[in-house]
Length: 218
Image (tube, rainbow, N blue to C red):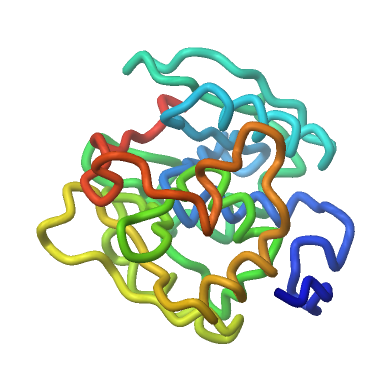
């Protein structure tokens, strides 16, 4: 395919803290500390995801630590930081400080525009090949966000749909050769170790019924 860098590609501009909003598109969580600071965290399925994401955090000036969440899965988490507060103010519903047991507290911000860099973060945290396309995991505790995220993909040339009710974990599904090529152009080449989770790779067993997604213990 033509790998010309598009205006919206993850490679089109330098990394910035705003790119980390891609983690909030899936099951990443942001927790506010009053109106002074915020912490961003995400629990992932495989250790490689945690280590790659920690590097992505650091290259954006936000140190992050890899640890084990209460559920036993790898977790990437920042400290409470002043520079993450704008992200919290945009993504947390008014009156919410962070995730509750049955509610993430998140909402897609008004006027949200998805970029290739955000989409790359989303794929690194919760993307995987499916049996007929590519799956981008969404937060099961934030069902009100799902349709909005599908809509946010359309201006990037990546029309998508939500997985059906038989899927154990909700996800945005991208199908079709042209859409998958557009998705790959947007997110760029996989980092070492991520090849099997990138668009175009063979689906992993039971990819459409992935084990239960989890939210972080921020």
